[in-house]
Length: 531
Figure (tube, rainbow, N blue to C red):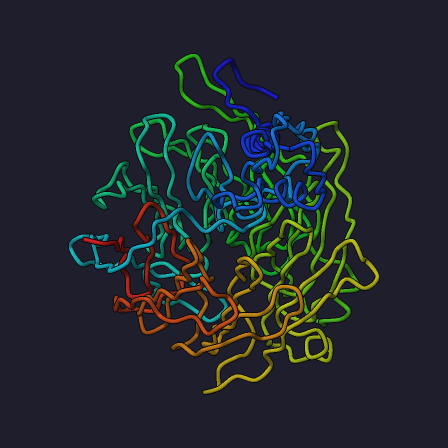
């Protein structure tokens, strides 16, 4: 791998270090000679892996006699040997670059941001400040239309920039540009980076501290953009038509994942791509890349094409990585996992998991700390398979022959809308939260899939649920952003507050240090927080 002495540690080193630091800082078990309670010791070890305050079971035992108490330290487990430790579920991606660096924050797509969550929010600023809209004309299979604001998935990036020590905000929009702002004021940090068409997906900030931004567009290109110049500068771009064969489209919706100098991304060209970035710095101190496309493979197979009867097999979700496996699905409903463990040694990735959901699966796969996957599908084809499997699934990829653990069905919609799920589910404690195209917000038991509660908002609801500090942040298509109390996951969550913005809130918000950042389809991008 290229680079010089200033190179940041790799993602594998960061994740291993995070696990070691967390455990060494937390696991100190005091024992008495008459303690002998193995269950209490195990409880203390489990508690040490959380960020909550220690419970009574983990405090120093009080001796009932005069025997001296001798402290001992449990040795930490060995460093995690894989690429992404399942224990990183729900945590920030990078210790070097704190923030929400990609769609849903980390490789398992399970990190929603950092609190506190506002308690009485108001609009702090709007971009553009002059009231204009982020609009442009784009053409798809429905013809030429004017698109405004930010949309699915469209989650903004917020990060603490190690280069200058300041907080940054960036997002792509339907005005065919990426914007780089000061989160405190909404003013530009850099000039806009203009693309040849709309930007409707989410982008990724380099997790290893390089001043690089990885962003796709409907103009055919996935780009690597340098942020250490006077203006954002394209260093490299991958054309969706550079690989073969392709099917369906040339858009890039998914937010890439970067691990150990490799970039992983699926495209609407229906191919899965791996790029060796070769990051470094030049003699002038500016960041450099020398990317090589080292692997690509069709995201479909003949069995899928035979089942669905067409070529609509684009990859619109963001790849998820847990352990040594990258997971993604496509518009034909093919969920698959690829083993990438030998990539750094020159080996070729191999497909190790295949499951057909039956219908368009554009939502991003979420991987939890126990190795399970949560997968949401639309209900458009209405075939026997999608009726059988359902629209939200808990999958165990270790059971290749029978991976379905439970499923939730959303086959009936109201008002003529299509049924099913466009948003990415959120996993919080013992709860899974999803939203449907028809506007339902549903909380399901994580272990069984049983519905605990549900309520209705103005649909379609494509915004993925965001949960920070036991608070669910959810927008609707009338432009109302709401917060709900999830401290008790077993009851219908009471609403904490609501804020009317206007314009369908389709893109997923980002929460960071008391502020919420998001755009709407009415054309504006907002920061809201307490006064």
